Length: 308
Ligand code: CP
Image 1 (cartoon, rainbow, N blue to C red):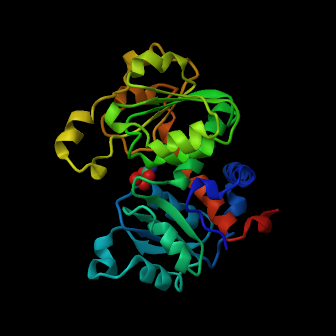
Image 2: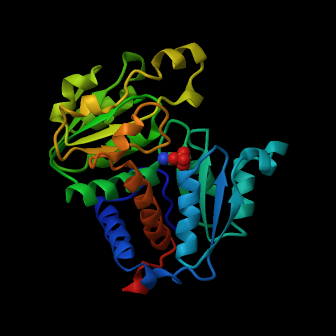
């Protein structure tokens, strides 16, 4: 039984297979409309979500399966003191696969140790968000036609942004990617990403504080929200939240084929006037999330071969 807790749980070949399957689903949706008939996905969300939870649920429905679950800790027995381990042990008696989001880093890993069914990490604290990574990779592949050879800028809250940590890890395995890390000093990527990912693998990276200084170099710009819920101090959040706002004026200096990504939700960091720019790909990215989650559910349930 395979779980997806960290993006590195998947080999590059397994990622290629999931992205290929997602693209086949996009190409011929009807072919997959009953592949999960009789199967159930449980979504256990101890932390708020719009895209991840609903795209998982839509994914399972479009595969012909059913969904059950909860969307906040308050509406589950964890509010009475039940442990994550007990919750998962019980839910794995009711469902064939579980997608779980939790504010505590490592909670999905703990769940995978006691679960009788595959566990998918749908975001754990400021740690990882591997299905957002698959979403991002599918979007890069569809927009650029490749997963290697480009300059990517990550901008905003690189300290707490789990989507950033997961995507950097996944991209570190592809050739000739130049990483530009744009953040205030207080929100730089964690030291383990620098030492364990960039330096250990001899990968080109640069840390800067100005978006304007580097925007002309970028092939992909990955914007992120400052993660209010991870701050200990509201005053620090207010001081840092609007450090970077991507607007039309800044895009004048960007490449014509720049791909602008954002895992969403957006707060202020991309002006709504940018939404009509053909380089804005973040809503397409949200749609890709549903297809890649369909492919992932099929893969973890061992249903991929059924369609071959
Ligand atoms: N990208 C993402 O994880 O969005 P949600 O928090 O809405 O699920």
